[in-house]
Amino acid sequence: MARIVMKFGGTSVGDIDRIKNVARRVKREVEAGNQVAVVVSAMSGVTNQLVDWCKQMAPLHDQREYDAVVATGEQVTSGLLAIGLQELGLDARSWSGWQVPIRTDDVHGKARIDSIDTSEMIAGMERGQVAVVAGFQGIAPGNRVATLGRGGSDTSAVALAAALHADRCDIYTDVDGVYTTDPRIVTKAKKLDKITYEEMLELASVGAKVLQTRSVEMAMKHHVRVQVLSSFEDKPGTLVCDEDEIVEKELLSGIAYSRDEAKITLVKVADRPGVAAAIFGPLADNAVNVDMIVQNVSEDGKSTDLTFTVGKADLERAKKVIEDNKATLAYEGLIADSNVVKVSVIGVGMRSHAGIAQKMFQTLAAEGINIQVISTSEIKISVLIEEKYTELALRALHTAYGLDAA
Image (cartoon, rainbow, N blue to C red; front, side, top):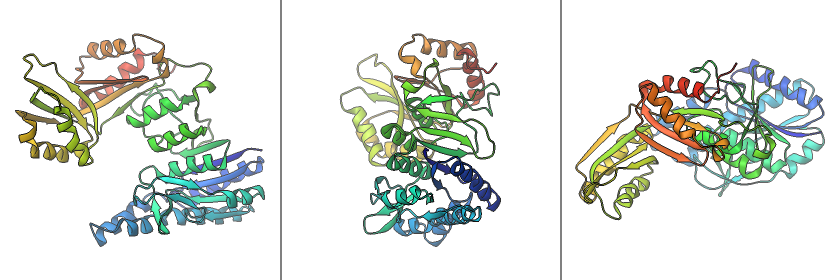
């Protein structure tokens, strides 16, 4: 007998028929002899509607009351699924975040989980009861409902799996696993049987939408085995696990891209100690996250060009922060470009194989694609290119690294 956490996203529980389909899937796991906890998102579109109502009521609303409103979406789904399971003859009950309780900090709207007390839930599961948990939420100090922000239901599921010492956390979504790249762009993309936490974390951080970064971080920290599966097809999925579980390690696990990039170049910045801190300090103070950074060599020892990337949504704010500090920074010009995309190749095999970067640069050069910025980590190489070359770059790299499906 295994203990399994099953998580279903918004599209998986989008209407009553789909919730009934989820109930049948859960019943199969119970009939296989497993203890099951289910984490659910709000029905697709519901959270957006609730958020919109809060904005209509007051653009600068109280985040605590905002959380009280938007958390109701998951509570509706959990109650409906519990009813559906009962209708199939199973013992089931719904749990809101505060009932478990899932305790969080007090950063409303994007709270982080501090602890989960699963003692009462485990007692019920050992009696054969299915626990249906509202994802995306917990209870903050002061007995206030708190929501976990983007990807919160995935995070809830992985955290609950860790607290329950579950054998596996199955995340059901509208895709049937993790692919070597976006199959909508590269038709020869292959589904991976297994991928390491580190590779999945890098893929999630550079644009892959299958799992949110926070949930992968938590899975890696607590060694929770996560399986990505389709809600709509009975197919094997992709297992996210420790590196030592993967016998045949591929050189690369995948190629990801992110269109959410904008480039800023500061022309002729004074080349002196403290300039970088003077630029990036105010950006950090204004919650602008900087990603890739490159600084040109100073020929005269007096000035240099500095290029960095920010999220597209932060571009105007970043420009304003820099322009407001122009007197301190002493640069001659600012050039902004949102017509860029970040393409990344990822794989644990990079640690032991040379020439990965060279192949990337040669492949892009052969296609006439200019590289604007480069950044690397132990298992990732990212380049910034003009957005119009995105699909060409993905297909060329996918073929060059031997990732095309036979």
